[in-house]
Amino acid sequence: MKMHYTLKPAFMLMLLMLAISPVMIAQRVEHSGKFTHADTVRGSLTPERAWWDVLRYDLEVRPDFLTKSIQGSNTIEFKIVNAAAAGRMQIDMRQPLTIDSISYMNTSLTYKREGNAYYVNFPKEIRTKHSARIKIYYSGKPLESLNPPWTGGWIFTRDKLGRPWMTVACEGLGASAWYPCKDWLGDEPDSGATLTITAPDTLVAVGNGRLIDKKMNSDHSATFKWAVINPINNYNIVPYIGKYLSWEKKYPGEKGELDCSYWVIDYNLDIAKRTFLVADSMLKCFEFWFGPYPFYEDGYKLVEAPYYGMEHQSAIAYGNGFRGGYDGRDVSGTGLGMAWDFIIVHESGHEWFGNNITAKDIGDQWIHETFTSYSETLFVEYYYGKQAANQYNMGIRKNILNKIPIIHPYGVNNEPSDNDEYYKGSNMLHTIRQVIANDTLFRQILRGLNKTFYHQTVTANQIENYISSQAKINFSKVFDQYLRSVLVPMFEYKLDGYSLSYRWSNCVPGFNMPLDIVFKGKRRIYPTTAWQNLNLYPEGNSDFHVDPTYYILSRQVNK
Ligand SMILES: [Zn+2]
Image (cartoon, rainbow, N blue to C red; front, side, top):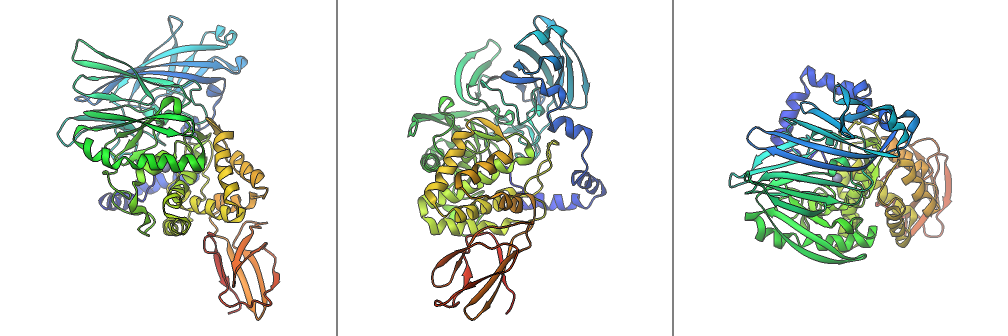
């Protein structure tokens, strides 16, 4: 997640009306190029973030449904990676929540708030330590999400029978919207996190990973403690509190038995048991293409949420209505997307791309969405064949805008305003796959990415270089073209009897992507931006066209 076009029509109209108000225009201008100091503080590796590395989060939270407030704590264990620079620590905690106190070695630390960042002062002796632990207490009314998952925050809603249902969605906005942390994608807690949720004892609280403790309290509340032992993105740590029922099953996967569990609001148990079977098909397909599910230790879980979905690691949010398609529609317009549940496939695809391999900077969010969007095409291919996959991939092109590059500015936590990192990104990968022209190797590359960058945060260059080196084809210009420009490469050609002349135009300097052309059979050519000639004798040029699976434009210039 999250795609912007899926907004409901009424909401689109509202946005349209807002878009023409001066306030909105001012904000859009600001975010189209100029960023504030606050953007940098939130989105970059500031000096107050760089000297320490998060090892572990132990979170406790108690929401109050009636007052829409929460109180909690986060114990942060961290490693000191630069002792000389240690002393002043940046902790992010978005208003209106406030930090109440911070304890360290039985003393209280002083701190100062600047906007949504707190600067905590450590005694000098911190410089002599390898690691340390602080406990941060916080409380207040968190930002509420008015349109989850597209706007972030807490969700205090009710299920169909009027019972409280509470959870969070905070991708992009950031986890600091509900708990204090180092809110930067590049630093995941290396040894995992626990989430301890206290809720009314009539409800069930679900978190990431495994339930390791549950106790009833004397005040009609119950406390559930969940744990993941693997690194996890901050925004993936999420509580779900509601009238849940669950069932479990074991999936025989590549790494052995995978513990799967499914949590839905009680009245949806029967329909969910029927429709969630697609999760097995998803696991089979994605383990084939991407390698073993990356979090066997923490299990796989789908949890019903009051919004479409989100890739919360080992606790995927599901709210797609227990039916095929995406909200009952097919994003490709081919009909091929109606046969399977888009949210189960897409959000689970993120377990490999997004959760296993995470972008260091949100400007590279394409690493999450491009590969995950392509996982839909691979799912179609696995179950419906290659031709169907080509159709699906070409079908999603209608959603491409080419207004801003897929890679967004770095260091400012800027979220994209369109969906090109999904559909254009997926078409870029499908195009690269055609150039590689070896599906065994292509699959090895996808699996190799998940193995090489297992549980890591990465940059775009690491991903690009890996693909080029494994394919033994230099794709640097291809990545520049599709990720860093809005130009769609134009294949220009002249046909004259048996003579074909061709070149690339509308492209970045040096663009040199190989291409397959078809005329009574396929032929590989190597266009550059200079004209080249090819003799088509003896086949002739009847039915000449370029392979349509490449995401390019073509134009005959001597017609
Ligand atoms: Zn996604």
